[in-house]
Length: 480
Ligand code: ADP
Image (cartoon, rainbow, N blue to C red; front, side):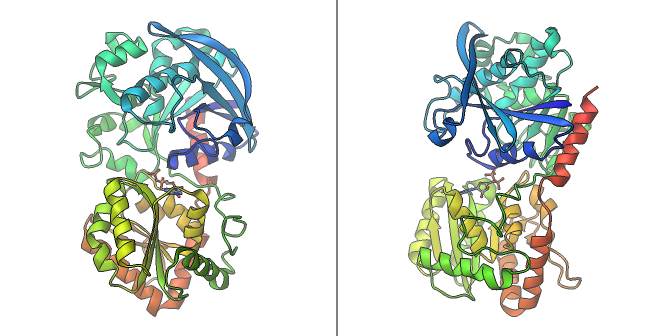
């Protein structure tokens, strides 16, 4: 049995701020259970809801040295969906209303978490062959592993993988403070190790010290070797090109399933969508006070409201897009200027735009199920899950050809009758507008073609089946 430990800062259903949690919560149960024992370790944040805290049980605790501090490390366990979860408890570090907040606190929080993950292993008696680390919060795990822990027999053959879900977030802070927090000697803070642009950089540490590096789509794996997408680490990504692969994300096909989804008013599948999907549109129009019209082209947006997702293009074009025969349903939170932009347009075009500035899982399912199209014109997109959810619900994605969007949405070709969505190449508001107009034209004037697009979208398979196999191959290659 090969033993794998996922170390991450969030995971569904316990705690989620973004797509990382979806991956950590859905991938581990998709491995071949006869060959791989995959477990997950997460922080036990105080902000985890009681519903999930009640499912955890106390295992043990100990005190761990973190530089000159000695800190409490509690360990809890839970089982969910056939996967074993461990939680690291420390109410000083994991307090607060959200998993992350101020970077100067997060830097110490995740140094603690990373060292605690390794220190806990001999105590709980789980000796993974591979520790699979996710994003900068766990970037110090490969570093600590090679720095101190490898000297201990228990850790000697342990390998690590660093998966980059978003290169933009690196966990960088001044070297003096990070040395003080981690106790790592000056040796580690040079430009071939943790140092980048004068700071200590956790993600860089993980990328340098991990035995393999992955990111969440092939296109993003290529893009991050260039200055535009490289977030100032393109040189490092080039240097690690031999160890770097792209493995596209999947989604949980049980949770995101229009045929069984308890959150949506009318269930449907690839056979029944022509009659049933429309009922979800009706219900949502009613719920949100939009004009009730089955025929209206309804475009959904579900997203963190940040520059990454292309909201400056949308802001620039929103007035013009609202002149078209469309409805917009927006669900998202984030930068205030974008929240207010959507509130403004919802006020200006009451029947046409619905701005839902909050976070709600059930509502997101209702929007995926109700809309005809889903707009996601990202500036960059490591993988993106929302377009996969849209495809699953027969909601046609309109995307920019970048990162995972390029790898998962096949552009409509009206001559060959292929494709699952609409896409444009350049980060340009008029290109986006033209693509929306093109989609709208097919929707209104070539309904049979549109329905075939939906057929193909719903037939596309972005469950974890394929990608889990690729991770298995990667693990096998590392395990001696
Ligand atoms: P990222 O991780 O960059 O935010 P992804 O597309 O990978 O983007 O994942 C976003 C996830 O968060 C999707 O599951 C999406 O449905 C969900 N989501 C984003 N905003 C909201 C919201 N306001 N309410 C409910 N779900 C949301």
